Image (tube, rainbow, N blue to C red; front, side, top):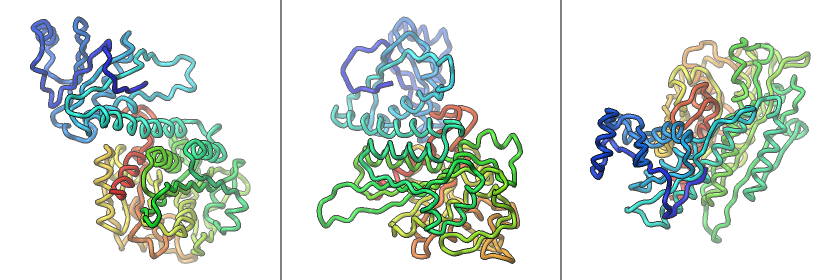
Length: 474
């Protein structure tokens, strides 16, 4: 679907009802039609005679960051079924134009690659206009929204792709293809490199899989004037293309969504693609830890003691706490890049979903101002989040009698926080105040549609991190 900024007569007019207020300039026939349907500005209403489609924005949601996005996404489900190829819409501000574009572009995504019968969609173009914005500004907003939304939809497609296809090698190849298209650098490292780097924790997780692990390093460095210093951001993504739980095998019901355990790494690819295409004035790196956690005669075991890249020893008590082991070595590797900001994204704990629900990202770290700054950026971008406070008393839960650390805490209470604190043990000490851990276990993959997100992958973290990076360049 295309969003265009052109003065062209469309077949359908979409009318946004801000705060559920009906427009004053209605004809008597339109007023009568709305009266017959008892329409008061809630939900959607289609007037066939005048070809107007009213979209109500709930008063309790407005100006909630996703009110317009969600309202349009919900409306699209009905509009796409009409025998109409084009629609028009009037926006009143830059923010509203951005939200409209994202509502349409993100709300129209459907994962139907494996469906023999595709969903019906007649709508091809939506034309935006505004009496309050210059055409040039509106065109730029449309362009930027399309770049971001297309990246998110590509990431959704990658996350939704089943594990029989989306192996570590597949995701690494995907990253290489995106890098080539965007003109950014991409290095793909195999097992030999991981062994050379002494990534014992990462390697252990991947041991029993027929699909070999990879570490991918994406680098975006824009051209800048000589002598100008750019902020340097390094992103680390958990990329478990499938997680069976290993020898600590998951119950069957908990395996059916584990293709989504690569969501953090996939989001990092989308972020790098977005910042490159937007030409953001920041140096951005992405480190992807790609592996499968499977079972077999050579699988790593509870009671094993692993030596991580930073030489800390880890007692394994549960092989299903594998993401933190992969991230441990990746965070150590990323620390060597000496960034201004280090951010990891991971579907790390079910406990974070218990704490914040399905739809919010957990923000953790040692720097309160940095956490608040990221939460503000996420809200600006339309992603919900909650700050979970690190607690020094939880650190002792990772104590081990036989190693430096244990990979699971001795208590399940506060385990989203304690998992984040475990990761902090592998961030260079000089970077602890520059590091954020984002637990996206809740919003990354939800088995029901919500707002602009269809069933399945949402692309969680992309909008929030891109906005955070943009804020560092102002």
